[in-house]
Image 1 (cartoon, rainbow, N blue to C red):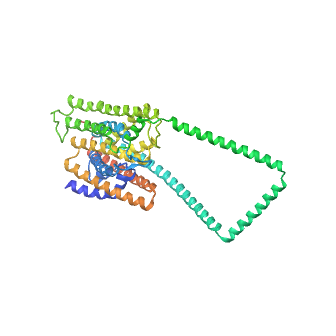
Image 2: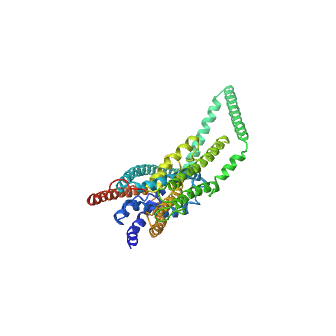
Image 3: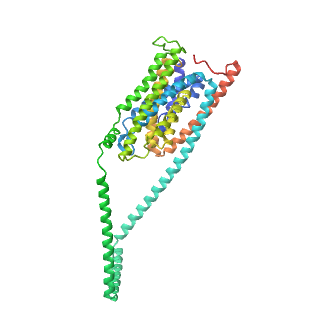
Length: 470
């Protein structure tokens, strides 16, 4: 009955605010779910984080189903999701999620609450700042559209006036007067002077024609000098595939490494299929072996992307706005940054999109592409982290299934609500402000959760140190 009671209390809230969690900017940060699950459901912080991750998993699955076949905003033949980004950062994010799950068990609940509160405050500030920037930009665009509309109306009025009979008569009178003046000037000008002017004008016209001819020849030579490149055409065709096979193979292989590792080492809910005891030497060998394998997956992706970048530069590839150039520096530094994103996602249950989305925007990725790519990485990371929580015994099967379904329904409801809001107001900044409001509410609830937990532990003489992972 506890799971049913808690779910009914919380589910209505998710349906109300799911447009923020599941669709707006597709960050899936469900950060407010942790304090709600703690205060209403009376779950420990670690369990609340695990349940939040399960909801993230369900919501991201429903949203990805709608984004998978959408196209790039600047090229309607390319998929909206940038699989090149996903294939290099996702293995690293998964590696970070493995570490984050263990840290979630190891850290005391009060420390998780403090870290979550700090993250929420930072994200709330960034959301408000981003909303103000978007609001200002929207006002400027609307003012520009209004000016263009006024200019268009003025032009139409002038055209209507020019067709008026009185105006036509006036224009003819002015034309006759100008013709008389020109005729008088020609008669008063000596013949030799007229000839000189005519020669000068003819010479000027010939010079202009010669310049235009040179420019046309140069343009034709430039176009003819750029040979057809089969390699470049092959690269372009590969980017048009909605579900690239190589990228999917590397991504599924990376996900399988984490999934198989979880089954081999076992946990509270699932004993090891090899009979390995928890925290034994074999246990840590399996956990440690997943890291070099995930690094290998990301490394393979990095080598491929670096090679493609070299070929693109060699054959004059035209990058779209927001495309990442996979130089040696980017191939090395970007995965390191996203390792932290995966760790924070599983440690605090905030959803990788809370970190991945802003990181992609900071890298200059097109906002719509960043949203879709972030949702895709959250789907893989959330599923891996949620299953690890299930195997480690943090949550049971009935809780897992119930909150997963809640996440799916919230994702669907959220997409409908966001579509209606955008159709009604056409102001994305309003959605960002709503995000900031709910994150601020989450911060208040998280602070209340921390104070309540601290008081309870003090009254009961509880333990404030780190927990035993084993």
